[in-house]
Image 1 (cartoon, one colour):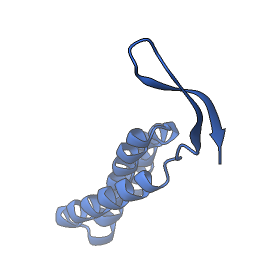
Image 2: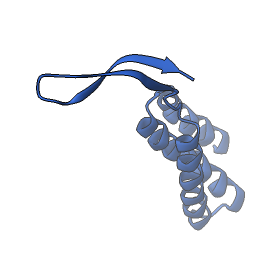
Image 3: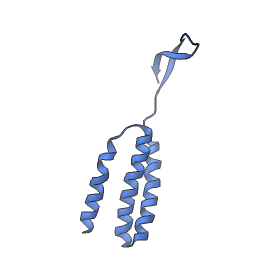
Image 4: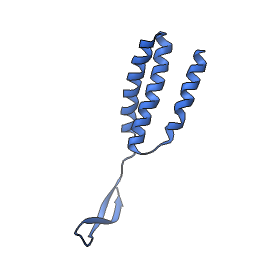
Length: 96
């Protein structure tokens, strides 16, 4: 029964791992970390309190890791132009 619970929880959160925006990565990291932490905490202690603590710690850790592994925009504006309202916009980007 414990193996079935572990497999079901991992299969439930596995499709969430493919998102790419920083907010999605943070949210999905929290969901995946919370679910796996709850399963591990529950299986390790055999109590609901262990699952709650494991879920909370897993969610916090997953959110931190998800936010810090998000890809950064590695380019800057090389040439600026102005529209008819006087607002700046970038004409040419340079990667660094």
